Length: 371
Image 1 (cartoon, rainbow, N blue to C red):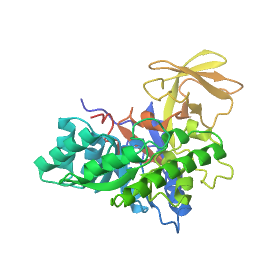
Image 2: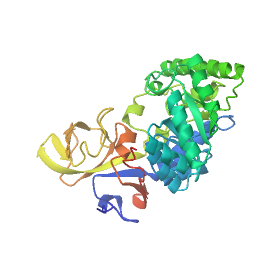
Image 3: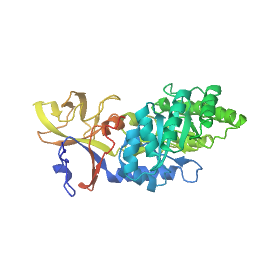
Image 4: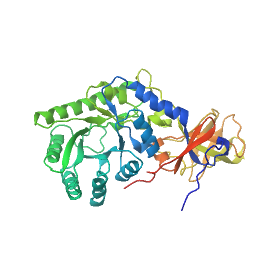
């Protein structure tokens, strides 16, 4: 089934159908530029995380601003990005299973593709897929630096995985993945700074151990929007992987950014929604519910209407309490998503807005890319 786009080029914002995903281009472009400016003169490189946007057009603009490549989480995301023109992709995740590894190996014929591993059996499976495809694949050891998600423990366990990689003829050891995801939404600046100091030390000592055993570690990569300048200042990290900075969301807005040095990135991503019912004087219902905005990090926030609060969501409805605001049937509102990444995954297009009109429609080609 071909889905009808919610807008056409040149259309006034007021006519754009709802619910849809708006990208305010001026704010988006300023966010991209602010990240680049904040790292001017630094030795570290930027490899933005494309799981936030799943869109080759955005990835290409990040590359044009100086990024060396992008990250993603799934082979299918990587395939979509490469098809859209990206030539350097790190799957910053473990890839397990014969079919996925065959696709990863095939993709490495088209672009530079790297992947993470935290298990010796998985390393051997990646090597087998690479050998069958006649390619060499870069593999990074993912080290648990505090997130307690994937990743082998620092030190000797990481050394063993690196040795397993170097023992494979069709793999190349490419460094350490050291992402402290749990630190990104610690609210206090000093909390985040301390978490990254701990992560950097674990990465540093692991690199030293690898070098002691004759394994050169060319790259330590990680970091996110909430902390990336702390990783940059550590003298440990070589690459940074922020993703949400281009959009920002309600949850990131809850962080304290004072004296962090990290720029105050702007909200550029919005869910455009229509008042579909006004059942009471202090309550309206909009057409953006659970299927239009992820609420795993909290409810969306109503933009530009301070006396309106998005209270709850069901499948197709969002209930907004009015605290002095007046909204009529058919009025349209911008909602700031609670969590940008899974919200983006609900849509087929970014409706790109500039000066109140639709400038472009960018397909979210990796939407639903779970494999």
